[in-house]
Image 1 (cartoon, protein in one colour):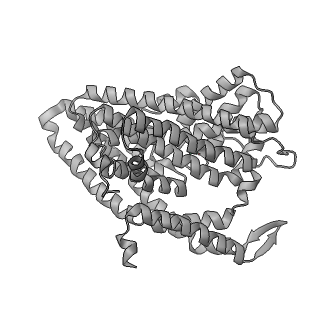
Image 2 (spheres, protein in one colour):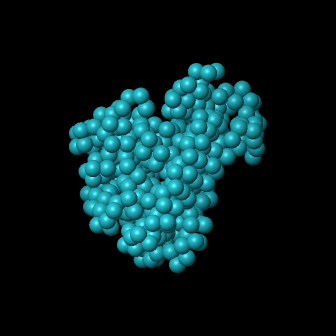
Image 3 (cartoon, helix red, strand yellow):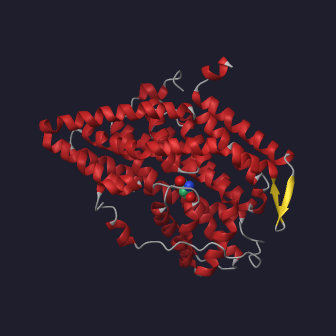
Length: 432
Ligand code: ASP
C-alpha cells in the first residue's frame, strides 16, 4: 500500500476516478432492481447513496468550508502584494478582457458543434411534464448594485462572491494607502493565508477518497445509459469542451505564452478532477488556487485576484453549453434560426454565463435569459429544463471542468504578462 502514499496526488485522484466508475457500475449492475410507479430503481444505487456518497459530500463540505476565508484572505494579500493600486487596474483589465474573449470563442464552438451534431432533433417533448420552472433572473441593474455589500459580514456569511471580492479589493487598496500604520493588519492577512493553505493541503490529501465516493455515486445512480437519452447533446458538449480546452487554452499557453502545454495540464489536473466530480467551480476554487501556486508558479498577486473573479464570472463550458442548448431548443421546437439569432445567442449566452452561479446545474436556469431571444416561450423553457435536468449531472461535470481550466489558463496568461510567473516552477518536472 506504500506505493499509494508515494504516488503524487493527481495520480491517486485519477486512479480514484477510474475505480469510482468501475465500482459504481458494479453496484448498478449487480444490486438488483425494483419498480416504483413504473420507474426502475437500482438497489445498488440506493446502497451507494446511503453508505458511500456521504464521504463525497463531506469532502465537498470541507472544500466549501475553505472558499470564503481563503478567497477573502488571498484577495486582500494579493492586492497588498501589488505594492500599488494601479497594478490592480492592469491585472483586472487583462483578466476581464481574456475572460470575455475566451467565453465568446466557447459559445461559438458550442454553436458550431450544435450545428454539426443537431442535438434535440428527434426529441419528443409532448409527454414530458414541465415540472421545473425556470428561475426568474434578477435584472442587470439589480445585479450590479448587489455587488456592493450593504453588510460585508453578511456577504461573507452568505458566500456572496462578487460582494466579497468588492470589499476585499477596497480593504486591500486601503491597506496600501494607509501604509506603515496598516502593517499589523497586512501581516495578519499574510499569515492568515499561510494558515488557510495549510488546511487546504490537508483537505486536498482527501481528494482521492472524496472523488471516489462522488464518482461511484454518480455512476451507480445515473449509469452510462443516461448519456443515451441526450446522446447528441452529451457528445457535442464533451467534444466541444475538449476542443475548446485544447485549441483555446492550449493555443494560449503554448503559442501565445510559449510555455509547455503538458506541464500546464498536469499542474492543474487535481483541480480539474475535483471540478469534474463536484460540479462546482466555486467549490473547487481552493484547490485551483493551490494548484496554480504550487505547480504552475503563479504568484499570489495574480492567483489570489484573478481566480476568484474567474470562478465567479468566467464560465466557458457553461457558455458553450448554453449555445448548444439554444440549438437543442430550436431543433426540438422546430424554430428556424437566422444569422442574427446566432449573434443574439452568442451575446446572451456570454452575459448569462457571467451571471451563472458556480454551483451544480446552475446554467440550466440561465436558459431563461438566452432562449426568449430566439422566440422560445417561458412554458417551453420550463419544459426543456424539466427534460434536461435529470440528465444534467454528467454534462455539468464536463463544463465545470472546462470552466476551471479556463480560469487557470487566464491566470497563467495574466501572470506571465505581469511578470508574476515563476517559470522555473512551471517547467519543473519533479513537482508534478
Ligand atoms: N456547475 C457549473 C460550475 O460550477 C455551472 C453550470 O454550468 O451549471 O461552473
